[in-house]
Image 1 (tube, helix red, strand yellow):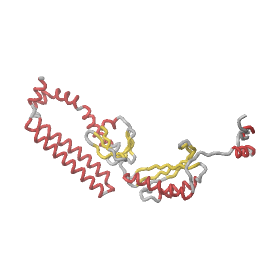
Image 2 (cartoon, helix red, strand yellow):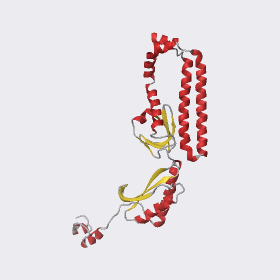
Image 3 (cartoon, helix red, strand yellow):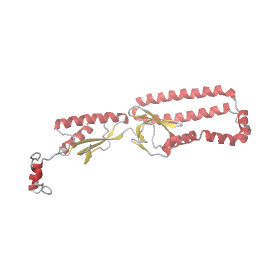
Image 4 (cartoon, rainbow, N blue to C red):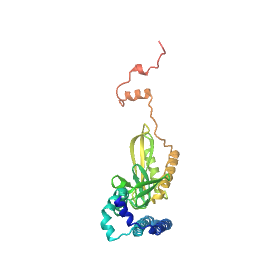
Length: 295
């Protein structure tokens, strides 16, 4: 009770209206800054990520400055107050705002170390999306199906986060196509190569590749054709995947290349192959006869 009375002694109710005006002004300025960055990003596409990063720093300074301006208005920060109540206030605020303080420090760490930045395509905790905002308390991520995910900054200090483009506009995209093992793999590989190199969304100044491997896909043995190419801008990630997939699937139909399927061999063919020394143990003749019906 005595500590509370001491705190109230230095409280300035008259400064609350001014502090509220400062907070409202900071929120309005932050909104204007965000809209300005978005407009400039659409106009100067090549500098979009840099502009978003500068906007994030400016918002941080705006938030910290507004808080610093409000505290002296609400509390009389005299030397006597700091000496008498400094410990009490520190302990009280420490317990009340420890999570917030941890998130703020984590946000500053993110801005300095840059494990990711605004505009990056990031995978965190099994969620994939684009970083839209790095705030004082949390990071906001927009998924590709337009869901807004809010993550406390402190989470990024202990958990693994993967950035797909790491501050660049281009990003490596991987697309897998599956065909039957008995299909023309060479033609399928050529089709995939033509599709990714002719797409208007592909960034061909970085290396691309088409890889082939045998896999089990949907309980079938299949040939996997993996196309890897950089997208020109992360905003066109799905557009590139759609464009390439449409070209590849249409060409597969024209060339008669079929998807994976369970391959069956006739027993008679297996027996003939065995006679040529191509298979394993001989199939008993009793298994080749058609059943004669119930006895």
